Image 1 (cartoon, each protein chain N blue to C red):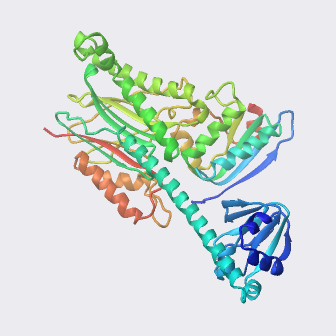
Image 2: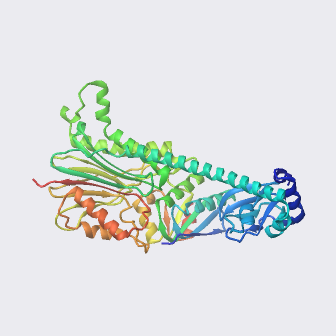
Image 3: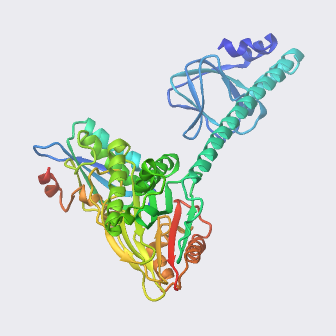
Length: 122
Length: 405
């Protein structure tokens, strides 16, 4: 189990201000703050939509899910806890998908197989 | 620079001025590092410095402050690092040079001894004060732990034909897990509850008390409210109403109220809990349940693999209006309903491997029965697996065994 989380950031070309955060490693109590910080930086820099690429997440803890919920609240402050329109998840690893489904987050945050598909959903 | 020097005897002050050499450090530059050999002490003429041990800041220093004198004059290793916060000009006083200068001056030597005693005494005061603060913080946490333990049931309900047992093992002083078991006379149901609040520590503990209270209060609302209008504990089923329907209603209301209350009142904190609640009719063993984002519950029998009751709806506290499916199952004589938190399958050993659901299922397959005994067996198996490795998460379990007649 990796103790670290690497976060790669890329801004997508196109009409909409979309940023992809590529996560690699462990998203847990130790690293949730780093993800929230990077997401807030991107939002402050003008991004309206976020895609979390979770293909490289080898451990997803409840603290990580808490961070994802907090980010959806920042993106959509007027509709807290409602279906996430501005944050989508890309290709979660089997470990991450299991946690997503067990905790029932998949009913509120769409999971996509490609960046284009995720962008088209915004 | 005078602030410190003013406190010294004139003879020592002169000696320091004589042997001190001015040095400048740029912002971020290290003056000395923890573990370095001490050969000098320093007096700040201009600028600011941080005293720290790696990332932990211990003190901040400014103009006129002296530092490094204990290790510097005693020739010991540095007990902390000092780094310039901004451009820093200091007077560096080397031990050997100072000792040479004061060697034949009793007044200056006396001044040096006095200075070291005063500095040492000041440091001792600071250490005492920190220890005291730490002691107070620990005491507060201990009070929190005692109060939180009151949010777990004092004892298990006595239900004819059943044996009920709980197990709770916190990873820290306070915990985010909870379990509960209580009888609801108004609908003739035994409530069995387990919950796991996300994250750990004090934040999780505060929310644990909230989740547990909302669930307990809502599930018993018929009983509690009936006390306001008549003296007898209300028994809704006695009025000819269908108890099963009331039980389903109570279950749905309990989950909906808890979820919607926390999601709308505390949604900004993003705190949530996975929860399993079952309302069991003791005579028939029939129970209704909701698994809100929690680990699979198991019906464990004497023969064969356990029956899993998987989650069917999201965790509570985040999504207002979220729907949860109500399941129905029967606990036959000889069977045990086992619920637990992820601290069981995710317990790790020294190699970092997890206990896993597979090990748990293998252990409880064809379990002969008994609530206390199954929890003891699981706790023992997890402890043996962990080999004394640090417990990362709370380990909580609840078992309800229906006795064979």
